[in-house]
Image 1 (cartoon, helix red, strand yellow):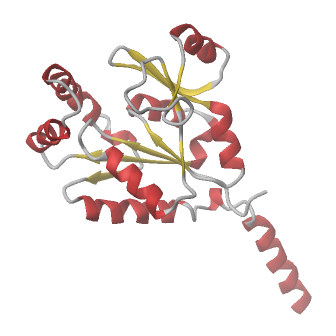
Image 2 (cartoon, one colour; image 1 turned 180 degrees about the vertical axis):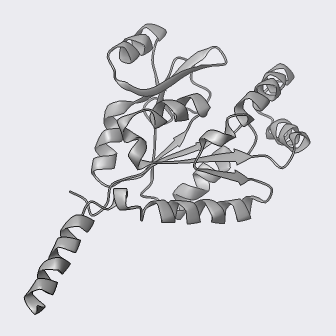
Length: 213
């Protein structure tokens, strides 16, 4: 058994609030953090690799995985299904590896209601303003105007679930937000629930104390 249990690090935000950038920076800070690879029914984008960026599956296969309890969480977003296969996450946590999740509030809520909630750290990112949120979406140059409009319409619904997270960070300056995120992760790793060896250590201290008595 590892000296500590791994964390499920959930990072959520409306599109454009900095989630992808902070996920990348967190893994650069600690390369041992694994990125959770989701399964999805959407088509691959240029450059995406199956099994690395996503597991690209058919809708029928996705629904079978959900039915058979193979998904830790799943959601229907913008016409496609997304979900996290359960087995790789449980294996990583038991081995003491942290797993980073880039998921929405629906997925976060499902994990919060699962047995793995004890080992979960959830963080929600807020934009400094709605105007800035739209500016970031446009500046990315990844989506047509109609997709940006849909993302903006969905943003308030996502933001309204901020109260369900352990920590909420306003991402005004990315460098400052990054430092706050790293501090939160460092603290969460020191929770009693993440240190399975503590009980044996305390017992050893008790034995040593009794020998001195």
